[in-house]
Amino acid sequence: MTNPDITALLRAYDDNLRSAAEVRGTDDVRRHGPLWLATYPDRGFVTYADLDGAEGEAVDELIAYAIEWFRDHSTVPFFEWKTRGHDLPADLPDRLVARGFVAEEVESVMVGEAAGCVADVALPDGVTIRRLDASAPDLVGDIERMMDMQAEVFGQRFGDSAQTAERVRSEGDAFQLWVAEADGQVVTAGRLDVVPGTEFAGVWGGSTRPEWRGRGIYRALTAERARAALTQGVRYLHSDSTEYSRPILERSGLVKVTITTPYIWTRPTG
Image (tube, rainbow, N blue to C red; front, side, top):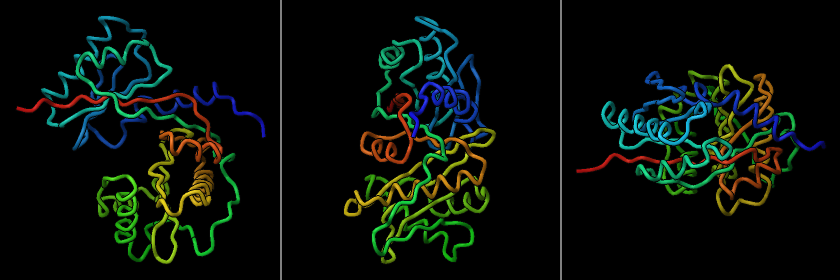
C-alpha cells in the first residue's frame, strides 16, 4: 500500500468540510466576516475556513463579536469555537482563553480514502453486524438499545431515540446507524453521516463495550460503513478521534491530518 498524501488529504478536508458543511442541520446561521455562527437548540457553534489573515486586535474583535452575538441574541447556555492545529494565527488559543473560553480535549482529525478502509475482518463467534434502517421492525427500540450502550461507554447520553429514528427515516442513506450484536446485546455501534455536496462522509459515535474491545469488531464496523459510503459516491471518510480511538481508525486506513480543539464559552450565571 502506498503512503497517503497527508497534505492532499488535509487540503481536501479544508476545501470540503469547513464553513457551510459544518453548520448544516440548522437554519439559524449568521455570517460575520470569516465567521459562521450557528445556533442549535442546546448550543452555539463557531467555525470558519480561515480567519482571512486576521491577527492581534482583529482577532480579538472577532472573538468579542461571537461572545456578544450568542450572549445577547440567543439563549444557548454555551457555544463552541472550533479550532484546528494548522490554522493561523498561532496565538488564537491564548486569545480565546483570555476571553474566558475553556479548552476541551484535543482530538485528532482523521481522514482517509473510503476505498482503503474496506477490508474483510473476521468477527468473533456469535457477533453479527447490521444497519438500523427504516425497515427495522422496532427501529426506535433498536436505537434505544444502541444509545444505552453508548451512554454506558461515554458516561453520558447523547440524543433522543425517537428523533434519531425520524432522521433515519427522512434522510435515508445519508444518515446510517450500524451496530454489532451478540446474543441480542449491542456490543459496538457507530454511524455514517454523508456530507451533502462533498466527497466526504463522517464516521462518528464509535463505541464498544469494554469486554468486547481488541477483537476487531469496531474495525469490521468501520469497513462496513466504508462499503456503504462508496455506494453513495463518497471518496473520503473523516472523524475527530480521541487518543484511544485514533489507533483503531489508523488500522482501518485513516490518517491524522491535523488536530482540533473545542474552546467553550459558557454563559455566566446570576
